[in-house]
Length: 348
Image (cartoon, rainbow, N blue to C red):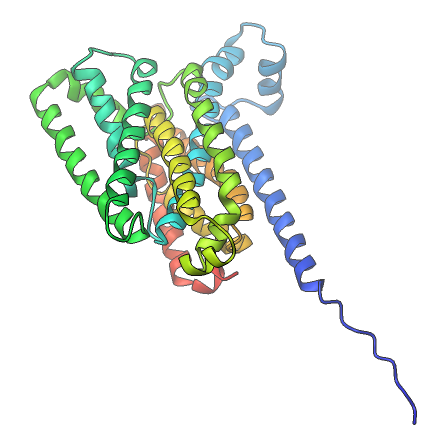
């Protein structure tokens, strides 16, 4: 009897192919972000060549090009990088915590909390500069997020995804009513608030990005720490417990990170739409549902989308500008529609 030796198939081949694909996607997203950063510094009502941008960054000579790059475009580019990162990562976290594919940073009332903080800063404390009321916006967002989790934890089933979404929606509506009531009583507050609420990167100096950067970094680090727990939560609470995860701690950590990120982003740039909703879907379509990869790719694509929107806003109606918040809504809506119509893209 002849024995034929059969070489076993490599069981890890599909896994390795998956990792290579994810690395390729991550590299492509990093290159896209790099291109967006460069374009943000070079393009505007007065386009500049790349060598002029590089010279302005490395050897400023006080000329027009240096002034445009360093004083006008660099601050908004830095802010776009920080805010886009924060909104995209927060969107991934909120969609995971609530198990709601339509969840976005405003789902827990965080954006409304930031709005209340900004309005109170202007109307009650007389703060008239963006760098002044950023802190009020962050504080309002944090208080709103803590209130949502505190109320949800008192429910019979605890801070479940449904409870969090319902409490957040109720708080969002209540805080929105407070904002509009304050605005209706003070014209000056309305004028100041109108500039902020549109959502955009213009008119912000580099100090704004520096103010919110510590909150964003803390939120990103916390998101990375709970990423594996979020993978378990996606399988259901019972399975997550069986795998040894403390689901309440994971949900609380992810929610707090999302609140930090959203509060910082909204306080600095206003409530910018669709970045936190569309980018997580795009990231999952490209790299699957593993939250470590999804968070990484979303953190690269979020700033790229926001900076691209800001660039488009500068170029569509020169010498005027369309705020980035309006452009993200116009770009994000069809992107999300495409992803919804192609559900096979979001499978793992």
